[in-house]
Length: 560
Image (cartoon, rainbow, N blue to C red; front, side, top):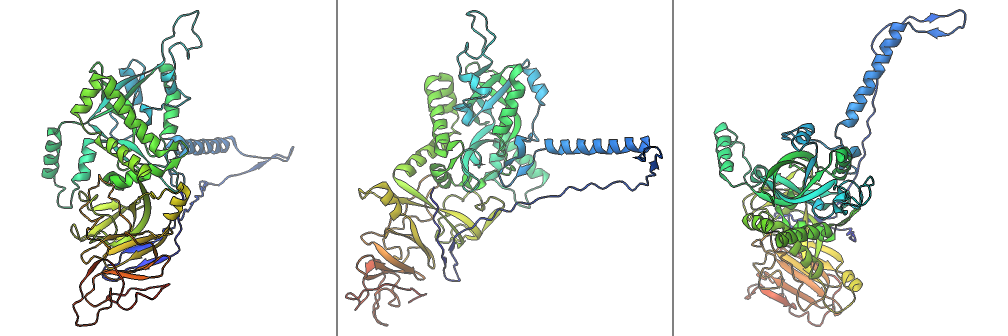
């Protein structure tokens, strides 16, 4: 994705303070120094007259040897512990943690399955186990991977797959990807599995007064009364002699914030419940992205453009959606399961939105902070279920203050502006160049972006017609499941623009004519004299007495 740098800062009026500015990322690598402090001991040295060599008593040598051995053991233990690397946004050396709720050890799991390892895949493992490695054997004909077969005997497959469902878990698109479907500079999004309880917590966050034992018991009873979710995926069964290599490969593959866990899964064809290992990113993992879980539009926009070492982000999503559709089409058991459990609706919705963003619309990523009372930050509609969204770097929550319709964001957050793609018949390169942002503008309750091609996109407050249209497209009534594109100002290509408190002034590209629209109570739009009937204008109008003048610059004040 091409990055656009705008070396400008635009401030709205003090009582509203919508703020847009370029966000610069700083990466700081911290290095630590490990020191070794020797014990406070006195050593007596014996000098040999014969060879003049300094010798240490044997007891002291053994003491030093033990100290060195203990130090090496501690270093090895530290190296085996999962360590998150903020620079790469992955666990170092592919050493991933085990989830604290993991009910069985690896040895117990293998024992239950007669030495074989069952793995539940719900993301890329459903359609791409890899071209190399242990799990890729599942895609090879039964007689092609066993080099020890004799004559024409068909070797037994060492890795098999069966469709299955995870019990009590939901597929959620909330995991950052910096090592597969995105980069450290622009993260992609991949899915994770969250338990029904974890999902419930998102939609029912506890307040400080809701932490008593009675409340916990009520929540527990409520969740137990709910039918457990089912998530369709693929169950791999790996032979005992390949388990160690398989785990090493999966640990490295899933090092982007995932942890090992053991859950119950149902085999679709037999209905048997088995224990299986899986890798999932829990809500407390360092790559979890709560904002995109709550904002489906932003998630779709990111997946439409993100690219990483493993390929395009949309390929990950669309192939998984295809897997689910294919599984339902060819297996009556899967079709019945998907019909009975609709937790995967979001995967299909995201796939549709990504295709629309690639064909009909274009996502533009901005950053902003301040008042969102009139949706001038394009944040209303997706966060009704939660009082906080995550900042762009995901390190901590950014709180909205006030009720719905009177929200304030006190730190920079990512903003998604969706606009129609150019359909003027020109080439794609020219169209993309025309859509490059040239300037951003903030008014009292409305905002704007001007492109190099002269398109002016306005959104936010439109009570007085300051958006240049009658309807308030892009208002706070939008649903998170719709792209809600913002249309450009009609019939005028703009060379320059400025926003007042609730009015807008623009200079037409090519002609230099000045137009205004919005609140006109003081004549700030058409220049009507004080005391006259000064009505508001929802469509661009030329100020009185200025129809024959040309302009190169214009400025809008609070009410002038």
